Amino acid sequence: MMGRSHALSGTAIGFAAFSPVVLPHPAIGPLPAGELKLGAHLGDMSAPYIFLMCLILSVMALWPDIDTSKSLATNSIPPLTNWIHKLVAPFGHRKLTHVPLGFAIFASLVFLAASWTAEVGGVLIRPGNGIVTALCVAMLARAVGVKSKRYVIIYPLALFGFIFGAMLPATAMWFMPAAVFFGMWIHRLGDFITTDHVPPVTWPLFGNKKVGFAILGNAGSTREHVLFALMAIYSMYCVFWLLFAAIPG
Image (cartoon, rainbow, N blue to C red; front, side):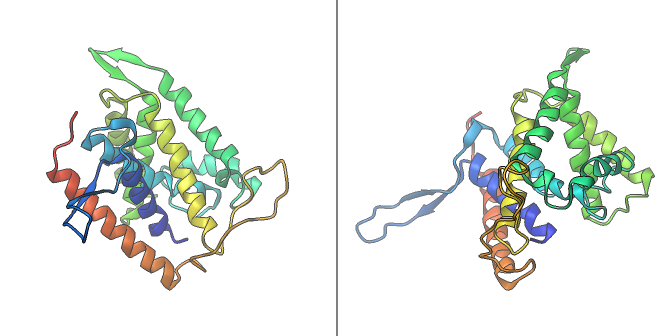
């Protein structure tokens, strides 16, 4: 699956899981007028945190490709992300970072980092959250064309992301680890439904043969473009609904 499809799938699935979006519909035959629920509203989050979760999911849906040298993830905050790439690259492409074991490792590292909580000037600080948001901001900058070697742009943006994330108010401890874990699963799902395929969930314990159900065909296929358009329409509807609908909390 193409990178933009991975990212948009993170956004769309995030809205489906965490938003309370509904679609009003008129009376249809014997069916009275009502609302079709389009989001599960898991976590009972307010709109700003739903947007933040979807943003992180869209970026984390690109993170598994840090096992390749030219990916956005690998080149987002050099040399830090290049070092991480060198740690996972020996396992091969679509191996450790594309299976639940890898998801759990990264989510656990984020949880441990976020567990360190300090209070500075009456403000609760969680550096682990800051690390994730710094990565997200840097990867977004790379996605819009900022070169990884333009340190004068990348590093200040990453620092801004770190400060913003570290000072997020009232963020539950599960928020960032769940975003990392869930986002990486979304990437795996995207590769699973194309001819790219992925290792079995039990890797490396039982077999290395890749599995998948290539309903989209090859990456960049017409079917993938159609899915991309549908996810874009759904995501845009969710954005406008959340911007103009009142959400308790």
